[in-house]
Length: 142
Image (cartoon, rainbow, N blue to C red):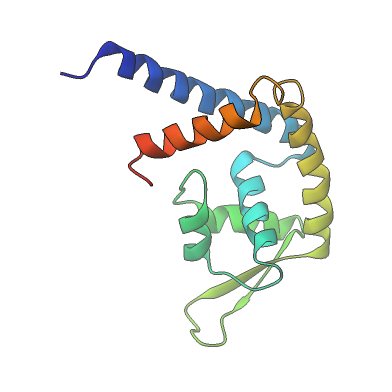
């Protein structure tokens, strides 16, 4: 039987995840960007200009979503991403971030960083590392 301390810890992890996601969503609301759209922009920035497919974006997302194509369409409408036919596979589309997308992402990153400012000193660097290790241990990652 699993002890109740385990369930209490899981509950705190879930609550904390929602608290962080809700805070990020609230900060991005005035930019008319959702948290998943923000996540996609961050993934694209990490590509350093190299194209990526919708399936690859989906694999890298924090919250996996079957709506990645729709998310990309919304970002395309805002001028934040480009979509082009993959030269090696015509059934795939290559997605890249635009200069406007990079500019707007930089502004959004500053807002998200501001969310964390009141909390960043609540854990020491060592405590934060221990927390990361424990969460990875819970997930079975080494």
